[in-house]
Amino acid sequence: MAESITPRSQDYSEWYVDIVLKAQLADYSPVKGTMVIRPRGYALWERMQSALDAMFKETGHQNAYFPLLIPESFLQKEAEHVEGFAPECAVVTHGGGEKLDEPLVIRPTSETIIWSMYKKWIQSYRDLPLLINQWANVLRWEKRTRLFLRTTEFLWQEGHTAHASAEEAREETLRMLEVYRRFAEEYMAIPVLTGAKSESEKFAGAIDTYAIEAMMQDRKALQAGTSHFLGQNFAKAFDVTFQSADGQLEHVWATSWGVSTRLIGALIMAHSDDNGLVVPPKLAPTQAVIVPIYKNDNKAEVLEYAARIRGELPDSIRCVFDDDENNSPGWKFAEWELVGVPVRIEIGPRDMEKGQAVLVRRDTGEKTTVAAREVASRVGALLEEIQASLFERAKAFRDENTHEIDDYEQMKTVLNGDGGFVIAPWDGDPAGEARIKEDTKATIRVLPFGNEDRASGKRCIVSGNPAKHIAVFARAY
RNA sequence: CGGGAUGUGGCCUAGUGGCUAAGGCGCCUGCUUUGGGAGCAGGAGACCGCCGGUUCGAAUCCGGCCAUCCCGACCA
Image (cartoon, rainbow, N blue to C red):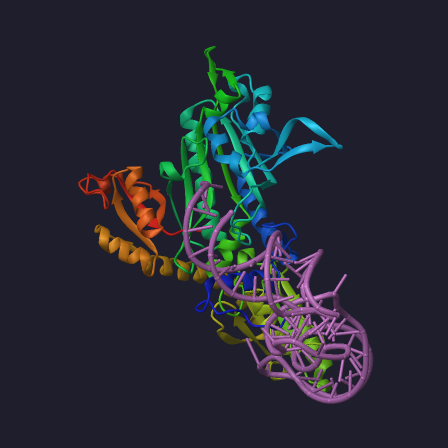
């Protein structure tokens, strides 16, 4: 357990894997591309879940659960959907020792089974909107997997809503994108860009896909959440209609939106360092750890003094008192840094004499000495400071590595060099997008909102034609 | 799915045809320690990734497979 982590500067991928394995967030499982989420990783997911779930409830959604198995024929009802997902589906062909009449697909996402049910549940405009979310696992047969970022099976939430009008469904799509933005920035301390996806990056079956897009420490982009306006595509495929107030029979309008355990990967790659995981206080399962330091002749007194300080911490601060006798203080320091606890409280004989304690920040390593009576308030304040400064640091890093460029050669130099985000005018032509990908491996991450005006009068960076969008290009996970 | 690298107790590594596979870390027992991954003594733990082949003899040579990483292809 006391081994070193590959430095980021030496090998970013190895560093990432080391953090996941050594901080015991996850471990490889026997089936290719699958992993076990260990208690320390799952605790992070649970904190994400509870924050998100509260936000979903606040916006009027209810949780439900739909089955893992979907009749294969369901997937085929929506043309783009089947084309997008069929290649990565696992299919169950046998059950109970017999070949099944109809193969069952293990859900890669649940639109089809959900809309088959919505058909039964929706008749009138009075049944709308229908706002349902589910927490579930899904399976996608990926060729190249990476812990948390892309695994064959993963955990996520998927919201599926039904509305009486296109406007209302569009509002919902953007409302949930905003929920994701808030969650990413306020809880994960990760600044994100919001905007629309280009045609080639859209969800299979959506009219419009929106995303939150974050920058990792290696300057690559990570799509951290998506929200889709599905139009009437699924309502038509599953014949889901409702009678409006004026008696007309109309197809229902739909959205879907999701975030997954990939967020844990985002958290790691946004904040962590060569000493291990760095977790923002709002998501940290343990926010503070007290490490008592004593010699044999003063052990009882130090422990009592430390316990008294611990007793003054409010219940709202999630604190662990590490009085394990078998490990040295130095060992504990390193271990708690590895797992990312935001604040360490060191309490030894010298502190006891002076009626104080030492607080250490995980993000900067900075140590401060505070009077015993102030520990509770200082720890609370420090947690808030760390939360804020992680965000500011990540934002400063992203801004430093975001370049507005209107010359194609320069764009190639940047994207093939240090990387980062390139903001450039684009005419909307997929051919140009494809050429950029070929030349630089970068894709359009988002078409940021409110930039159509800025595009007017500019020339597309690749074709030279009049630009329609301002696009953000980057290499991505 | 293509190209490359790697695979030896839980982890890292030595051993490159010949005795009972060696060391460090970790683990267990005891003592001693404790302000940045402590010390001493004793102990447990390996069908050398898996399957097959060559050989009197294989961790070592050959073939296949599997897994991980890297680079591509593919992919919300």
